[in-house]
Image (cartoon, helix red, strand yellow):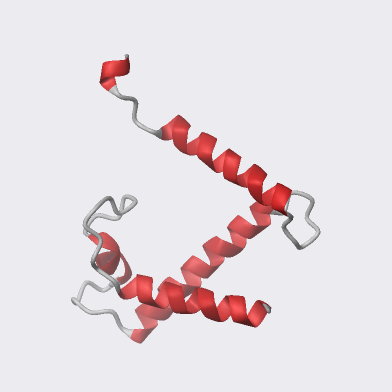
Length: 103
């Protein structure tokens, strides 16, 4: 099961890492995801750059999982996942720019 999840994650990350079709906000990455992954700025993503992007994203996902695992037992319950979802929502709301009309 873990292998299936890992394969699915890597497949989705691979497709996402090379995509440059984002027209909206790009999470602070000026120039979009493609330029963010193209670390040598040669206009293409090498297999090394692709693997580095996958490794970075996998590490971020591992860290997120460990953050969700509140009791540190190596698994995440629905309750832990819901608690993290609420925490992330509060953080997003806290950092969301306020509407000036509301001030």
